[in-house]
Amino acid sequence: MKKTLLLLGLLAPLTFQPQILAQDAPDAPPSPPTVPEAQPTAPSVETPVAPPVATPVAPALDDAARIREATLAYNAGLAALKKNDLDAAAQNFGKSAALSPNDAGALSFLGYVRLQQKRWDEALSALLAAQETGTGLNTRARAQLLNNIGFARWNKDEFPAARAAFESALALDKGYFDARYNLAFALMSRDLFSAALPHLRQLSVQNPKDATIWDGLAEAFEKTGNTASALGAAKRAIALEPRNEAYRLKFALALSQSDRRAEAIAQLRQLLAQSPNNAPALLQLGDLHLRSNRWGDAAAVLKRYVALRNTDFTGRFNLGVAYDYSAKFDDALAQYGEAEKLRPNDAATKNNVGRIYFKRDRLDEAVTKFNQALALDPDFYDARTNLAIVLAAQKKWDEAGAQWQTLATSAETASRATKDPAQKRALTNRLTTAYSGLASIALSQNKWKDAAAHYRRLLAIAPNDLEARSSLGRALFQDKDLAGAEATYRQVIARNPKSASAYNDLGVVLESKKDRKGALEAYSRALQLQPAHSEAKSNIARLRGNAPVG
Image (cartoon, rainbow, N blue to C red; front, side, top):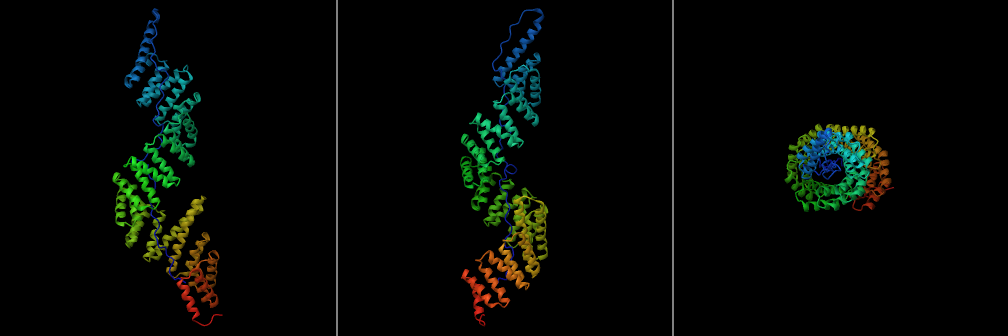
């Protein structure tokens, strides 16, 4: 029987920051723009209006002159608008509206020009006045007016009123592209993706060559769980605008999230061939290489990213991870050091530095770093696991046991509180690690009963953990519970009849019970399963050298 302790030999996995774009990368690709590049609709009157002929009747001369002045100002406003002279246009439409307060056309144009000037309050005031006086406008003109009111309210961050205006415009004119476009992307900006989807679908039919719409569809599909359709829409957007870097980057991200890494990498490489200094693409490509365990490739790409964004925490951190996994620990520490300067309160960085100190046998410094990480995040599982391992390596059994017990207690509490199957599985894994750690410490102190109790707790939640079951057998054997040890090893063999080690350990137990024949059979079976099993060979040779078996 092997007498080595069942100690955890490796530290918990490195923690790195996957796919952090919007928060940490300065050049993160934008989400589909909220009301992307949408323009308010110009009122329907597009050609200058000839001034009416004045009727030479004395009482009406003042009205005729006012109407003539209003009309001239209106036409001058149209002429200025065609020249994109917005100040002159606003001045003339304002003059026309002042001379003819009930002229919905002049007010509509004034509101439209103010929208172009981004003077939202003045725009809304003019448009609402046009709505009030324009009851006689035709259906199309009223729909346009409502769209522009919605546009003004949107830019004043009055989302409910903006949405209502866009929807009212569509109620008047179901084929009104601008209003549907504005409504769809306004909904997207509030994460109302299910509500936006039918509008985006209709827009893609109305204008199938608009890449922005397909890009919006891709995001809406992705956010509503339709991955296949999201990828199809993203691919369509790229086909329409193959040099659009933001579209290709988002397509690559969608491929990555669908675990189609090779295709995602191909898209990012194509983007970088077109634009070698696209920082978000470099960051994402580095992330994909990390996830694919291609540490050298990751380091090469992330070095380029850091050269462009040397004050970006994520780039520094992930480059440190790439060096760390490549066992280039000096380089890794240098990058983690820069990451710590950028974000002094990041627990993951301190955890990873602690791992390197442990590997270099700088145990006190490792403990310091893990404690720093836990001070920042008491629920940081990796850091607490690593701290327990290092304390055990220092033979500080009580302190290590306290860390394992803290992990076990927190996992037990969280497991009782959740019904989510994925969370349950993750917490079960944490519990088994904590129980195994507690059992290892008990074994190291020859506390066989305590070790057996911890293994039984572990096996209650992970009955198929044969390593733990074998370790339970060792603890029982050391505690002189030979019947329990025999039963435990037979359970291991029942679950894995090809385990040579289990047969050898069973033989040790049987030999201790004075069952030499049974022991020899168990050793022989171990040797049949694994001809090079040195312990089984030694045990057989020893037994056969003694008195006859029987």
